[in-house]
Length: 391
Image (spheres, rainbow, N blue to C red):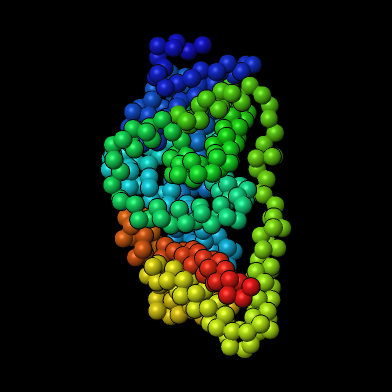
């Protein structure tokens, strides 16, 4: 048993059968946490060191040039633009914060890696894959909440780049993803379950099953209580790893909207003649097209990209298989195909709002998301407008 006097105050000791587990509750923006990790490893000399990273986030930390391998066309076609944009926002916020505090984001996790290598301990990547986490957050939201969340996500770009001291102090006691998503967890309580509570379970089980008798776990302070609550129990991870099944409701809505528009045009024709239907068609085209084009323009899309959003939105809104943002994003990527230098510069570019908008890679993602968002609002507004003038 290790002398408690040798351990930092941030460490929680857990006895589990023949294992001794030392959970270091860190602040993701604190230089002191790096020292706590080193001191704990020196005192414990563990067989395993668990860190709060998944394979993807670990790779992003150790392979700085990984962005160069990204195929932006593939990202758009596989409908992963929003998820990639969310990950960039995570990186952007913490990179800016790290620069302000002169602390490398994830420094305590990097220290855990270094210590594992130094003493020959097993390194365990104990966090759930970030893409699974985001997909579970997204997949359990209803269509309206998804729309609100994306709107809030986009609005976050316009927040000032400086981070005040009050926010910094608050962040020292909370989880990294929770801080980024705080506005969403406040608005949508169900998000917390997917974002925090499920990861508490996942982390606890990965730590519990880590090899060896002495284990050091480096996690955000906000996870410590949840880990202690679950680590004594053998819990299956299958339920928290499942990708949510696609709900039939969005699919029904996607196909119902075009049908309703066609029905409204037919009713308008019967009630008001060809002129009435023509006016409704103009409303559909202009509102849908203008709002989608506006989204592409806000993203600083090329004029041809903006034009493609305007032309594509009224058509794609009637075809559930295609989205206006995908069309606009592919056009933007074709016209302004990112270079290797653009991909290499992405981690630096996203540290500022200006860079986020000007880097060709992140701009393509913004075009996709904002053009889609504009088209969605255009569909809602024009649909209601046509219904009111027809019924």
